[in-house]
Image 1 (cartoon, helix red, strand yellow):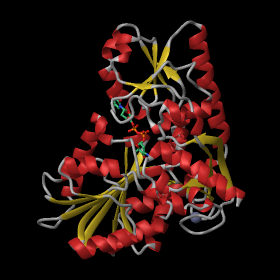
Image 2 (cartoon, protein in one colour; image 1 turned 180 degrees about the horizontal axis):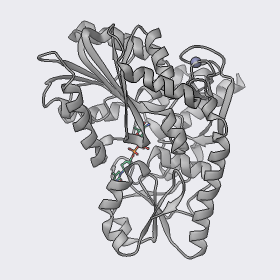
Image 3 (cartoon, helix red, strand yellow; image 1 turned 135 degrees about the vertical axis):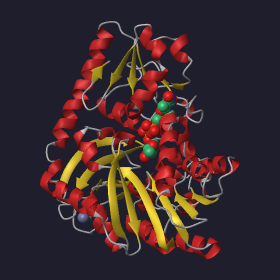
Image 4 (tube, helix red, strand yellow; image 1 turned 120 degrees about the horizontal axis):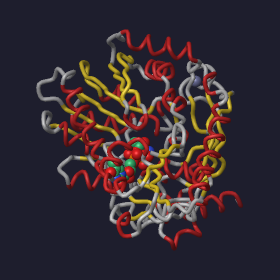
Length: 438
Ligand code: DWN
Ligand code: ZN
């Protein structure tokens, strides 16, 4: 009873930060707030490999107002891996209603991502046989990708649980259902609109606690000749580029092709093709169909993963030590710069940046502010560190010597845009794979 009461108080704190009208609060139970997870969500084996423990940290996208700082909540953040199928996953889950019903991230704030959407749209078009295809996008966010697709496929439907973001998409002309995608939602869409010729799902499969239900929904909605195209960060890239900061409560799974092939088969889908794409620090683009057969890319990825130890999680041994070392070196470099009199700020109020700052012990006394283009985040404080998020003009009005690239995945675009800052002698600190100044 006492625990339940505590959970309600905690959730009320989160809810007041993330969503002013959380109707579900009254029915809240402890399990909806936080749930330990000890079995693989793909193959159900017990998770035997402890990979990383990042302590107890706030939610990476829970930007907050000063008045809500006393209510801020933190949750355990750790990763375990499955020795049977290689899936890595969080040790604790936070209810997706808390994480995603009100959201502040919009991909359209990045020119790199808009260009990526154009490229992906063309890639899909070249692989679509239907004359007037019906395209459905789970987790369509502000409709960035569907706007590109509407150029050649006018029948599109976004599915986006963040109500505030779904409204933005609708206002931009992208029909959007304000729901989580699931087998149930898929059946409703099929009943109301017919089967989909294309389902495209970027940066969502790793966010879904019930991955098999999501994939089941893809199978339910996909027509016989339909194609489902996914993108998701690749576990191998995460480990090789030390992108440990992409580990946070929203990302419940860390995917390998070995685990994906198994998950697809369990959901009645065939994983037919896999390739790599550089977005978000290194991702997989992969295709699923109902029936059909895999091309040789799938077997190649799986063979490589087996050889490198990703098929059984072996490759993750020692990752924790390397992460701890990186955290220490990053904080050490920032301390040295400050001791030399440098003034520092962050660039990109990213979710991963917040993980990086909170887990490396970098705070408000280290970074004066964080600039970000996204108006939804500006005026708020970064979770955990409470560093103010401001607009880019602050770099002129309150100059610094070093910009820490918290959106390191967009370093090229940002450094190009901040040429004047560099011309004045400003330097950029790129935190991963190895903290360095450029
Ligand atoms: O999976 C997820 C990925 C896809 O996106 C989510 N869970 C959350 C989000 O992660 P993130 O916040 O780390 O994403 P980004 O795309 O690295 O965020 C870039 C941020 O930088 C945006 O807030 C926009 C900002 N930005 C900016 O202010 N000026 C970006 C560019 C290029 C710029 O010039
Ligand atoms: Zn498994």
